[in-house]
Image 1 (cartoon, rainbow over the protein chains, first blue to last red):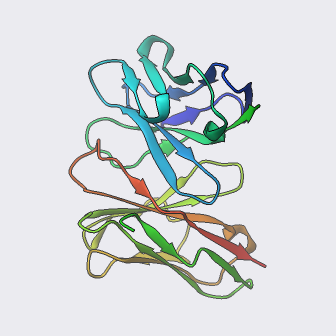
Image 2 (image 1 turned 45 degrees about the vertical axis):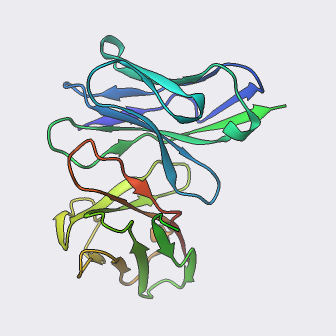
Length: 114
Length: 115
């Protein structure tokens, strides 16, 4: 069965610092990969997704992620954190080739200090 | 608004009671998903509809849980004989249903508390 691991339930950064949120998947076949953000009392919003093609994916709000097959990773980064980036971030994976059901990681809470 | 809406936003019930949670998807979206999110966890898949039919209900934990989507739009998740362990945020999402790379759009969720 596919699984998604997000290292660190909480990540704390200073405003303006690099944001790095880690995600690893376990799958023999590279899946489709997604990052979602969840603000308090709101639904999950898609930040970016990788399906095929370029392994560096750019998303909204200045975030990007790189698919590394050799490391089974899909880490999320942003060069400079803003206070408004404070939220819960979820990585998800979905088997490629016909499945509609993603498996989500447990989430990482990003805390941004002024 | 044009997003996915869910009602109620909060529901408190007593153990053993029956509850219904409603999801209004984005107009035109043929695919609809229900998830459950427990505290400190990511969303966990429950059931997926394509149109009016449940295409995959493998995530429903037991027969106390049931969902319908009679006209291919609004969906209702029904929980019978609620248990304290059912307390969670129930999320609904919808998509165009055009393929497995579809983007799912999530509603804000219904927070269910079973006392």
